[in-house]
Amino acid sequence: MLYFPVPITSFLLSFIFLSLLAPSSSAECINRDLSIAIDVGHSPKKPGASSATGVNEYAFNKIIAELLLKRLLMQGFKRSFIISQRNPEMPLHSRASFANAKRADLLISIHHDSVQDKYLKPWQYKDHTQHYSNDFSGFSVFVSEHNRKAQQSLIFADMLAKELLSLDFSPSPHHQEPIEGENRRLLVPEKGIYQYDELVILRRSKMPAVLFECGVIVNQLEEKKLSQKVYQQLIIAALERAILRFAAFPKETAYLDNVPLLPVPEPPKTLVSPQAPKDNKTDSDKDE
Image 1 (cartoon, rainbow, N blue to C red):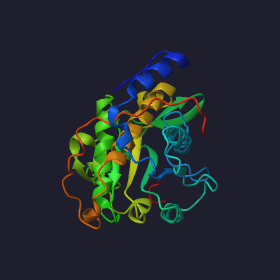
Image 2: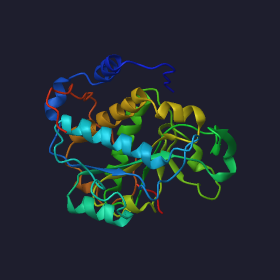
Image 3: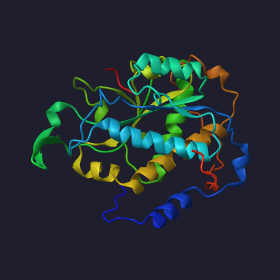
C-alpha cells in the first residue's frame, strides 16, 4: 500500500496526479454523455462507522464523492451528479429512485469500511476512548445479483479493482469470513469483489451499480493514509480511469440485462487514460 509520511506540496501532488492521467489517442472513443450518479454513503444524522480517531465515515465519503464529481465534470461528463446533494438525509430507496429518474448510466456508492465488533480494541486518543482494529485493511467492491444490470455492474467492479491494483492498492478479504455480519460471497478474491444482494441502493437501481469501500478507517495506519490528500487523489485516479474504461466499453450489452453474475468479459485492451484537465473551472449506503 502507498503511504506518504511527510506533507507533499500542492505542486508535487498535481504533478503526480496528472502523470497518472496522461492523454491517450483512444480518448475520442469515450462516451462522455454518460451520466454518473455518485452516492455519498450514509448521512450527517446517520454517519456510519467511526474511524480509529473518532471521525465519522460520512465525512470521509463526502470528500471522495465531491472530488470525484469535480474530476468527472472536468473530464466532460456534464450529466454526472451527487444523488443526495440537496437532501443529505435522503433514504436509501429514495436515492435509488432519484438515480433512476435522472436516467443515470452508472451508480457508484462511496463508503469507508469497518470491522465486526469482536475485532475492535479501545485506546485513548486526545483524551477520548476510541476503538480501532489493525487486523484488516484494503478496499472492497460490492455488486448485487438483484440489480437489473448485474453483469454490467460486475464489469465495472472488475475495471475499478484493476485500476486500484495498478496503483498498488490491496483488497481486503475480511467480508468473506463466516461470522455474523459478514459471510459475503467473494466473487474475485484477488480483486476484492463481493456479491451482496441485499444492499438497497444496488438492488433497486436500474443502472449498473457498485458499492465501493475505499479502505478500513478503524485501522490506525490506513486511516492516516485515507486522510491524506495525495492518497485521496490516487483513489480518484482509479475511479476516474475505471469510469473512462466503462465509457469506452461497447454498448452492445443489452443481452446482459437480468442475467446471473457470469465471468467478466475482457474490456478493450487499449489503455484508456484520462485527459489532463483544461483551464476551465467547472465546477450507499449499506442497509440502515
